[in-house]
Amino acid sequence: MVMPFGKWRDFEDCVKDFSSRGFSEESARRLCGYLQARLGEESSTLTGSIRHHEGKIIRGEALHPVKTVHPHEWPSVRVYLEEELKRAADTLVGRPLSLDHLYPVDGRVLEASYEDGALKYVAELNDERVLDWIRSGVIERCSVEYDWRSLQKVNGVAPKGITFTGLALLKDFEPGDPETTVEVWEMIISKLRKAKETRKTSASPEMGSEKMGEQGDEMENLILKERIKALEEEKASLQRRVKALEETRAELTKRLGEAVIEHGAEPRTPEGYVKRNEVIRELRRAVFERVPRSWGYGPYMQNRRIKALIRRLEGEG
Image (cartoon, rainbow, N blue to C red):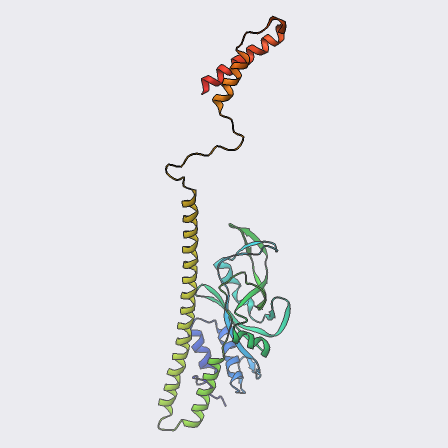
């Protein structure tokens, strides 16, 4: 017997719903299987038996089309191309989680897709200590791990043929991409469980359809609110970028202003500098006097060469 869960009539109804939102059928089945199992339902579907998950869901944005700088690694400047992230997004599915790229944690990526300008993920995390760090804001960013097939030079180096191998939650390290996000998705799970319990206790033959409709609307509104929240966060991120660019422009303008010579300011002569006219004048004093006969032919000719040089300098002046 197929049992309803959340706002959906059955597993296939859930798959259809997520597919209509742009997920592939395989991705929709993974998400629905996880949600169904997380709600405590035991069922069998076309994808096989679904075991009960004890962990919690986290989600966020793992990477954007961006240039990142890694001073102590090679390549130090990396450019992530949008078409490459789109192609490689599903290779993140099933990959393990780690802390700061160093310590394995109990968890894996359940779903990943590129949409709205970001590589987005949904993951299972079974480590309560790490979950608490995410809830308290100690962990807010993440970083992908990957292999690449080749490197393309584009104002930096762009990895091509990316295959993602893991997702690191960052506690003590700064991310290459500062716009990544990590958050616990407890609210949606809680709402889904509440909707299931409400259906079991309050549905009646007369009001069953109406009640299910209300629960469906509630779930739709919840997903819509989550989407609005994501858009607001994206807007805030863009506003921070615009502010940073404005500050950079202001700083550059200030530097240019500092380089303008003040009107009426006297030019400063570098220390040890001798004016050209003074050099010529002293040379003339030295060589335009009468040459003693005792100098001989050699010094006489050298004197003439110096005089010719002085006339040349005077002519170029």
